[in-house]
Image (cartoon, rainbow, N blue to C red; front, top):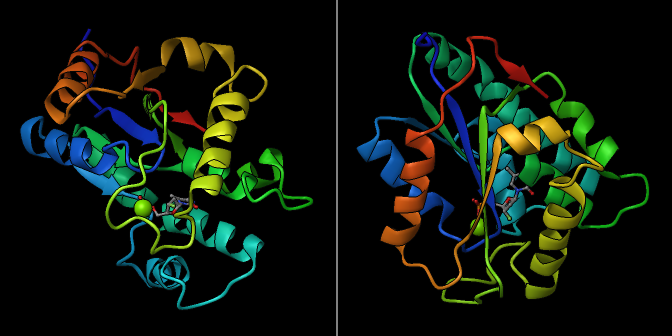
Length: 212
Ligand code: FDM
Ligand code: MG
C-alpha cells in the first residue's frame, strides 16, 4: 500500500554538523520542501534573530516560548504540504528547543517544562540526529549568543544523555523513527550518501500523523 501524505523528516543536531548543507541538498535533489527553524523572517522570528545576535535581551522563559511559537506559526503550512503529498525536511525543530533551553540549567526549566508549549505539534516521521566527536570551533563561530564551546558541550550532553534516551523519548520512536549519524571524519558527500540511503528506505506505516 502506498501512502498519500508526504513524509515529515527532521535533521537535528549539534551546531556545525552540516544540517543546513544537508537539508539544502535534500530540498534540491529529492524534492522536499525545506523548513529551517528558527525561521528568522516571520514577526516572531525577527525577535528571535535580535536575541540570537545579541541585540535584544529576553528572559530564558520568554525566548523559549518564542522558539515554540515560531514552530506553531508554520504548522498549518507544513501540514497543508504534507496533506498534499509533499515531503518536508525540517532543519532543527522541537528537540533543539528542548536541548538549548535545558542546557541553560535554569531552575524550573526542565525538559518536561520545556516540552509543554510544543505539545500538539506534528512529530517527525523520522528524526536524523547528526553528532560529532569533538566540537569544531571554526570560522564565523562565536558571534551568536549560544556559540561558545562550553555551552555547545552542555547542549550535546542534553541531546545524547537526556533527550534521545528511553528516559525521555519513547522506545518505539527511538527504534522505528530515529537514526543517529556520527559525521566525524566524513565529508559532505559521504554524509549525504548515508542520509539519502536512510530516506530512500524510510516508508511511513500509514497516513496517520504523529504528534508531540
Ligand atoms: N535554537 C533553535 C533554540 O535555542 N531553540 C529552538 O527551538 C531552535 C529551533 O537557535 F543555537 C537555537 C539553536 C541555535 C540557534 O539556530 C540558531 P541556527 O540553526 O544556527 O540558525
Ligand atoms: Mg547557528
